[in-house]
Image (cartoon, rainbow, N blue to C red; front, side, top):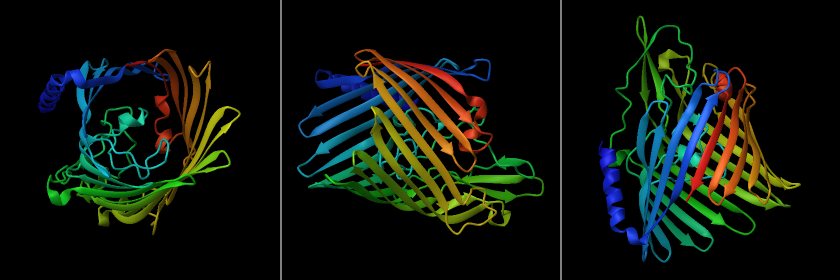
Length: 402
């Protein structure tokens, strides 16, 4: 209720300034059906994404309310994806308010792009600008030639949104030797200055190369599941922990292609283990990196990425693999004066021999009016993608941008 009142107040305010407001956004109908469940609908959603820009002098306002109607449960969800103010100066600017912050060079994966938490209630299938959550933050950018120095302060913590336990996207849980009960008494992070988050980034954009260096003192957006054995049950207490990190990314043109890389080094990340004497949690430094290659071959845009996660000082009772390897492949081509696009994006999990294939066909009927047909195919029996082997689906999105 408070959220709805806040949105109404903001909209009332912007209407007062209506003569100088720029309206844009989109209306979309999204229908999806599971192919292995007799065509049972998995998505039946209507979205109105409304973006409002107002600028006057050196100050600009941006408000992005989103109205989602889910016909499967007759629920209207009103959210404020972003709402911030930009203040511009000669050599720097400030952005204050709820905002999405995007870092890194990766496509389809999150490595250093961890400032904004994620909404994973539909796995990783929505567009990434819809997966990323807006966060209350102050972002300061200072410009010096081709360099930018960025500081982000996040006063309050927001966690990743995980699927409901009854959702088809609820992740597989480990097998435990006895019944399990959850205790959420340790799952809160207090709203106070000492619990805030800070992130720093230096970026350089040049003719030969562009790169970024970053560091952050943050909270892990996903809780560690601490396990407390009892005589006839296991008590699991989710708890959030600090996650300091440093990272870098780069991209460089080489002979008509683009080579990309991105690395994040996490300190004392918590991992699940089978050793209940340490409450099923072990702290290890953790490396997550990517190398990518983009090129246009005979009119087809092609991209390859190799991603590896490495747990240092590994112990055999840990539930994650020491090395987790994933590859992605993207191929896309346009036809008919770029009104028709055929594309395929795929993930392949090397460790578990599982995959997600996402072919799509998109056609622009007229300016702003687009129809997209696609399918999501999960392959394998286990792993990040194979666990959803029963969730293959076909879908259609009809969208009008204004």
